[in-house]
Every structure is written in structure tokens, then in C-alpha cells.
Amino acid sequence: MECEILGARVPSSLKGQSEMMEHILMVVFIVAAILALILFLTWWNVQQLNMEASRNRQDRILDLAQHMMGDYLLVNENYMLDDAKLTSVNAVSGCEKLERLFGTDWYARVRALDMEDEIPCTWNNYPDCNSWTICSYPEERRNVLVQKFPANVYRKVSDKVALAVLEVGVYS
Image 1 (cartoon, one colour):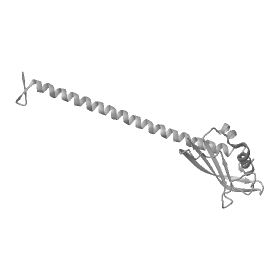
Image 2 (spheres, helix red, strand yellow; image 1 turned 45 degrees about the vertical axis):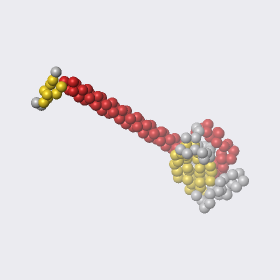
Image 3 (cartoon, one colour; image 1 turned 90 degrees about the horizontal axis):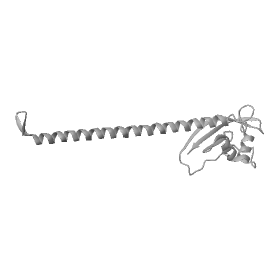
Image 4 (spheres, one colour; image 1 turned 90 degrees about the vertical axis):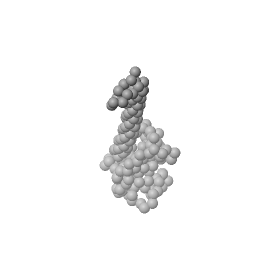
């Protein structure tokens, strides 16, 4: 049996084969489009999750800084970081008690800017120091988000206020 297409006679078996090829190509294109859409939506979802995780970490840093600048363990009655309290928290209580209050996987550093060199504070060199590390940062951690805030440190012995930098970091 023959079929006439544009004035030419074509056997019907070739016409059926070409229609099948058209259908196969159409199915391949539809499947490729669906796969591309699935891949795009998956990529989009992963990007949204990464942005949400970053936002959550940033919010945690802000909460930690806010609590540290208002917590009675670290500040005096004028809401200034107290160097004696920072030294005692740094030397005596360590990180375990603070992790119960603020959670894990964070660190904080306070550096008063009233001395040129950075001198870590201990019981032995207090008040001739200007740097306190609370819950030190483990060096093997790579994924860390850090924020620095201006702060005031009350120098109890000299009865003065020094400008300081509070660095809060969250790692995973």
C-alpha cells in the first residue's frame, strides 16, 4: 500500500517508521526537559537551605553577642564588660558551664584596645593584660562564621573604661 505526500508516492511502511521516530524524539525531549527541571529545582532547594543555614548561624552570633554583653557573669551594673569577671570566667569556670548556657560550637574573644600588644589575661598577669578568650576555637574546624562588635571593658583596678572588640564565632 502506498501513500501520496506532496505529489510523491511513499510506501506506508516508511511513513509509519517516521511517525514512530517523531514520537520517540518527542518523548526523549520531554524526558530531558523533566530531568532538567528536576535538577534545577534540586539545585534551587539546596541553595535555599544553605542561605537559611547561614542566616541561622548569623542569628546565633547576634544572640550570643547580645547575651554576652548583658549577662551578669561578664558585665558590671553599667552593662560594660568587666575585666575582673572576664578574667575569672576565663580562668575558673572554663567553657563547660558557659556551653550549658549558650550551647556548643561557639567561641568568643574580647580585646581591650588600651594596650598596643595583645596580652592574654590570666590570674598571674591581671590587670596588666588586655585579651580574653572564652571557649577557644578548635583549629581543626574549618567552617566558621565570625562577627566583631564594638564593646566597652571596665578596668576595675584603674577605674577606667577601655574601648574593646568582642569577636563571636560559630563553627560547625
